[in-house]
Structure formats: C-alpha cells, structure tokens
Length: 286
Image 1 (tube, rainbow, N blue to C red):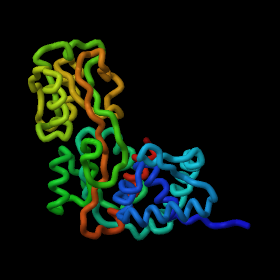
Image 2 (cartoon, one colour; image 1 turned 90 degrees about the horizontal axis):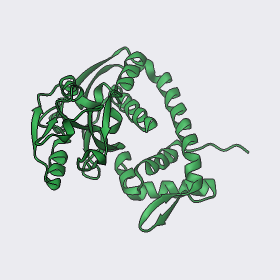
Image 3 (cartoon, rainbow, N blue to C red; image 1 turned 90 degrees about the vertical axis):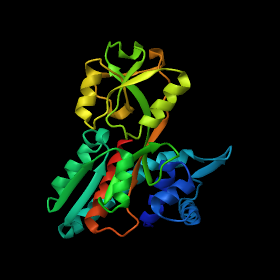
Image 4 (cartoon, rainbow, N blue to C red; image 1 turned 60 degrees about the vertical axis):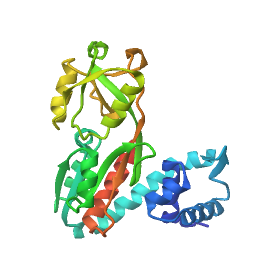
C-alpha cells in the first residue's frame, strides 16, 4: 500500500543534515528546537529506523540517513519546481537583493540568472557591498534579503554553506614571500579582514595594504599581477590563481559561513521565491 511522505518532515530532516544539529536547524527553519526534534521522531517512526545518533555529545547521521539524503533532496526539489510552475504566473514585484562582492559573480550568478529567466515579471535590484554593510542595510529596510558571510559559529541567519577561507596568489608568484606581506582586500569593511589581520598578528607577520577600494576586479588584478595576496572563500578563487597552502608560510584562516538573512517583517511572494532559489542553489552546490 502506497503512503505519502510529509514534505514538512523531510525539510526538517534536510535542515538537520545540513546544519549538523537540531538547534541550528530550528533557527534555519524558524521553528523551536522541540518542534524540529518532534518532526524528526515522527519521520523515524514512519521509516522504522533511526536517522540520527548522539556520539560524544554531537549529533551524527546514521548510514540510513546518509543514504536517504540525496533522494530527499531530489524529491523536495521536484516538489518546489512543481509549486513554482503552478504559482509562477502570480509572482511579480521587486526583489532588492544584497550580496557580497566575491559571491555575486561566482556562486550566486547562476541563481540570479535562473530566477531572472524563470520570473521575468519580477524586477531584481542588486546591492553589492561588504557583509557588515549588507547587514546594516537589511536592518534599515533598504534591501529585502541578503547573503552575508561571517565566521563559522559567529553569524546569524540561515546557514547555506560553510567554506574554507584561504590565501590566494598568482601562480608561481612571490608576493607571499615579501615582508611586510602585501595584502589586497576588496574593502576595508570586508568580513574577512578582521580574521585575516588576527591570523597575521598571531603569526607575528607584518603586512601592508595594497588595495581596499571596493572593486573585486581591481583586487583580482593586484593578485593576478603578483602585487599582493588576498583571502577568499576557496570556491570563489579564480582558476588561474593559486590557493596558497601551509608551504607558503602564511597562517591558517578560519572557516566562514555563508548565511541567508531575511528581515523580521513579512516579505512578499517574490522575495520568498527568490530566497528559496538562493537556498536551494547554494545547498545543492555544496
């Protein structure tokens, strides 16, 4: 006898898998931890086997959970595609989207392009700025949603991915050997800047600024021509540049989370649909 799966329970399952914890999943889903725990128990009762176990104080997925995850993702994606197709004609309006300089042309470009093609009646207004500035604009109501980078465990919002912050330099370059170390950052308000400077200070390395004027292309140029090194998320480093490992003599950098932020106020269907595509696009990518 066929039975229907509860999409709400499946979304909670995916959220717990993605965030590795009930508390983080509850925050991402705007639910209480108790509600998420109850939904996971209901899903385990339906399946007839456990999905998570406690090991050394941490929540660990079972082998069955790992096996089910890709199938559940596909099912949720198909559900959302059908819903978007059915309701697509009614979605209109304006979406004011804030995105950091380093993500707009790399990770988020396919998402923005796909939304624009699927919802041509929705006007997209992009705001590119450093993550701290985007948080301020979101709080002021100047944008409708934003993707914001923050050190892992220190940010708010819905965690979409966690990435390595790495040093990047010209292939075969020598900028990383110079002292003081020439560093190029997109802006002085860059979310990575405090972590980079703290790592350099802890390692006792002197440094100097080469560029901090809010232009990702200029930053890339200074690195590509071996005038400086920079710090980027590993997935955003251009293919013609090198990720500098420990052998380069530079200190290790912390992981950063890419978080989706929505305002406390209610948002319209266009913003909700755009947020869904951003969420799905980044989670599937990782």
